[in-house]
Image (cartoon, rainbow, N blue to C red; front, side, top):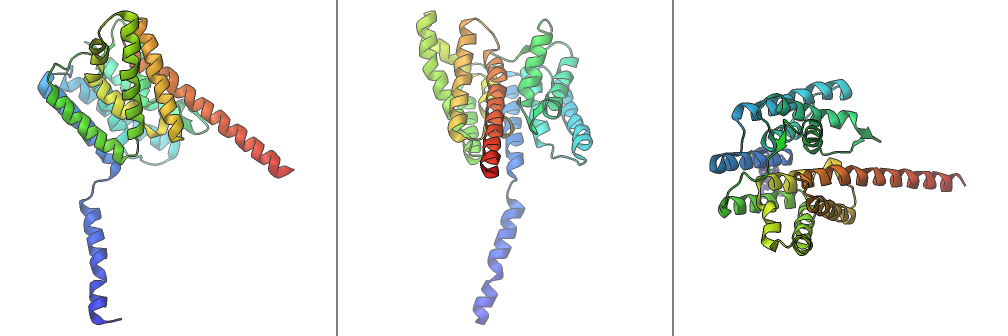
Length: 285
């Protein structure tokens, strides 16, 4: 090997080390993005109940993750997921009291450890925590819905950044299928209700939908494995949401995911178990 060649060899190693040093771990992209949604939404439209309530939701989620991760797995877990759950509860929960924010975060994190089948948890954590409170304390708790305004540029920026991030995470097809289904089913709702198509589409521009589209329905831990079935399942989420909307259910998207997502997971787990049984029987013969 020539001297010039040997001298040129370390360069890629150095360049690779530099890239790793200045690159951002994919696990932290989503927390940064959801924080961006929080900051833009609150500064422009005041979507938070208070900084204290959101802070409590985040702290409870992180502490619960630390304790439960240590108890169940014997180690300290990465806290990116807990942060997302906590900040989602802090943004989406609406209540004059402080306790619903703490309880929503606690239920969200606990659901990952308690409600498991074949070592997989079934519900998106923040979806479970928020829906549980909406079921159990509807007189005290509501969910963020219309606090957004009519300014389009923050919404456009969020959707562009969100699309880039979930495309990088290879989850763009899920969000795209849901949005396309929502727009298409808006025609059905418009025909049935007599309202304009624009009125039926309008809810998807709200901040609750930004979290729903980019974080809840794309959660890798609580979606089925097949790309084709991910698209089919998310269409059914949109379809059930349409049925709930037609029956004047206020929190239709949250409830639709609460019902459809775990059902799809259970079906997939059952099918995988059946395939393993069939494979074992065929190997035995």
